[in-house]
Image (cartoon, rainbow, N blue to C red):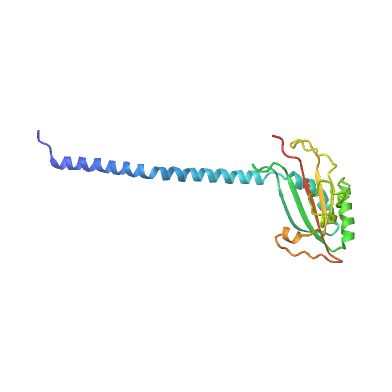
Length: 202
């Protein structure tokens, strides 16, 4: 039987093209899969970050009434830090806010005591002999105040007390606020208020 040689060449060429495409697919499909997985992981991470960012920091909410009183008394917010407790590495909500005020240290202490008292707390003045649970060096402890007696009523958290602390002209506040210079002298003070809550229920 006679076979057209041109047809054989065309058929062989088609088979070769198929083999080439198949080989290219085999070569590059792992890269394509990795790229797809990377896009999926990045998308899930961004969604998770947005979801976490929208969640409330209960510790910040607890400190808010005190901070409002400080602002009403003339204080200005310098910076804040905290963690809502929603991450895999931390389930304890905490918050700390820093403020400057054009008042003497004695007046700033009175303003802080009034702000916390209005919110239902009674500050104890810390000392080397009366530091409560504060883990602060003795040379700085007298600039700190605390009240850990109030029970947390948040149903999403474990049973436990609210840990409230406050400072007036404590050392290291410039470093806390990213190097922001905050004057401390006879007529200027720096205050902070912090809250730590029980961990989330599991």
